[in-house]
Image 1 (cartoon, one colour):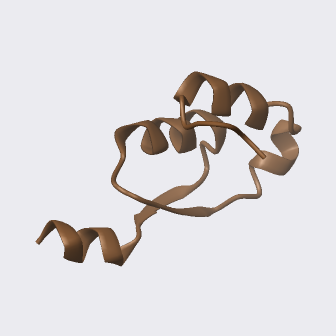
Image 2 (cartoon, rainbow, N blue to C red; image 1 turned 120 degrees about the vertical axis):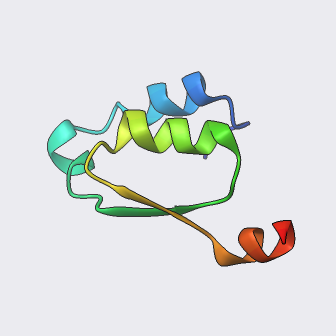
Image 3 (tube, helix red, strand yellow; image 1 turned 60 degrees about the horizontal axis):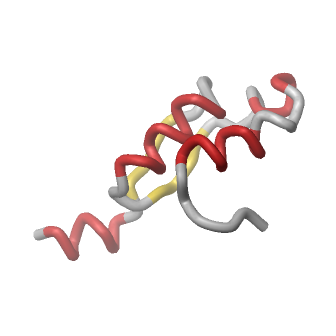
Amino acid sequence: MVKGTKAETVIKILKKNPLKIRKKVLEVTLDMAGNMGLIVKKSFQQASQVIYRFHVKKKL
C-alpha cells in the first residue's frame, strides 16, 4: 500500500519492480488527476492510459 498520491513517491515505489515486469503492463485505467498520468508515463512506458468513464461523465 502506498500512502498518498505524490507522483515522486509512487514512482519510486513502482520502480522497485523490475523493468521487465513493468513493460508487461499494457493499459492503465486512471482518473483525471495530472499526477496519475505522470506516474503511468514514468513507470509504465509501454502502457496506454485510459480515463475511467465515470470521471469523464462527471466532468461533462
